[in-house]
Image (cartoon, rainbow, N blue to C red; front, side, top):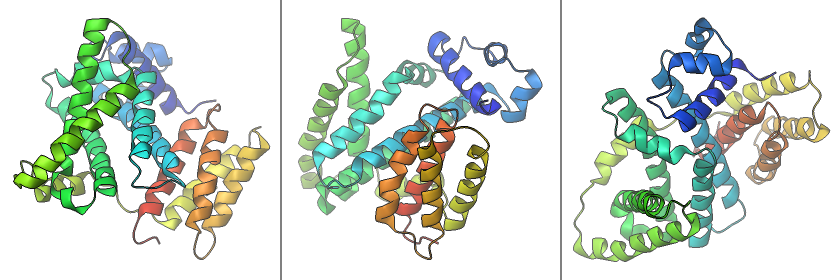
Length: 297
């Protein structure tokens, strides 16, 4: 049986994408998830908080996929970045999130705007860092602006593509075109030396939204609880074996990053058609955060 909180999140996502945020009430969510009002408020204080959980779960799913794509590939390869962007945007398309983002962006609700801004800032920060991997040190002060240019271009081309043609956008074409705009603007930015968004100011925002470092102990405890849970149900042997392998590796004095990179993707995939899909994705995301931490403990 699925975790009740997960049932609520999935029901909420379906309602938001079918009816829109404004036309979905808490009662609609209760009816769809088949839960009581008390159960809902046991997990979420409001519809806004429920939306935040929906967006966060989707962000984690996209983050894990982007990290998996990068394994074994050159970090400065523009084609790898394009592949990551396309994969991430296709998940948004799969869950029909783009119309939801557009609706929320036009609502005069301070709390909603904060939720949306934080969600977008994670994307901008990630892309800023990937631009640094690819284009190098010279453009470092301008990569926040470049990331905003990319997402702004993609968003508006997508909006008017849908409006004018009544068809789904070709994500690959729009990603390539948006990257080309960034590449054409970047040399002029560097030459002019004019900075609109001061990196120091943006870095303070980044620090505010950053996750705390993930420790070995945190992952071990999470994995042990997860392994105990799945041991009581019937699953593919592969799923339990991969979970045990991850536990064994984290119990080493110094876990091997190359080994973890090889195990995490098949671990996550082995649960993709089970009720443990989102828990496995959350654990996978913790591993990627742990491996990126400069001071692994």
